[in-house]
Image (cartoon, rainbow, N blue to C red):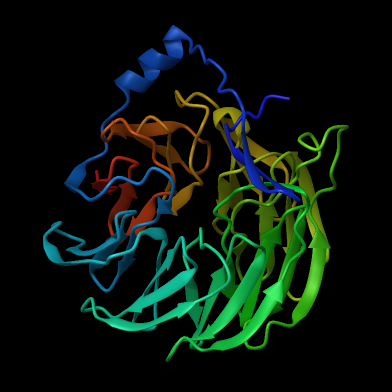
Length: 379
């Protein structure tokens, strides 16, 4: 079976861990589609800069208190003035970063391949550093003085935000064959929401790690182990009523936040992820499709499939726009109520792995080559 996302698959074996890479399919685009993309308006560029390249890790630039924090695989952490792009400070560590950035409660949080969690303050000084069990591929998150970290071996740790000491740990089950992903966690309403291999969604207490409820998003289907993968490879999204998620080769679904009962589900497949606003759930699906579903009923509202790429990032909602980036370094603005392409701009031509990061008047992206681009959504 061809893996449409060219995903890295990790197989747990008695002899160790092996990676399986699918062959990338050749995509041919229609001339009309390409002409329409070229004719689209340009998104205003505010500023750009460059940090180190990231060949393996995925990094999310994060805005906090008029600053944009950026990490790279070489172990550099940089603080920019988000409005001007002026570099405020930059630090260089001896190790390599594998994930970031999480920001909150005065901390800038980063993970490493060695399983280290590093917490810095807004001046770039290290506050604490602790070791967990394995490499960290998603940004640590913090809320209510608890830092939550997910490791590649299926564990989720709750750490004290003051000194990094361990408060609790949860061990999730890991099937023999899983997608190696940067699936993180979502913190909201005093709970930790996380998706797992096998299509399970779990809600646990932020304060002690106890599981409140567990729901099935999708069931494995098919004959081979590869066909039966139905992992949740992105963080859930949450509002005051619902928690929603999507699985690879499975379904998109929404659940009641306090008890986990399912509201609706729809056939869908995504390794990139989803987001929501007050009306719609927006899902980046396979083969370059962005879909909008009614948040209450799950009815399909629109689908956009003509963005010139089959590998898109998780969407970002910014005002009236849905923002998605792609593997060719383009960023796209779609109209939120019908998916029509409004504007599009190039960066440096390299893969954008993580979804765009919100700025007060726009968004920022980080490319595989280390390009940092801040765009405005004020036309």
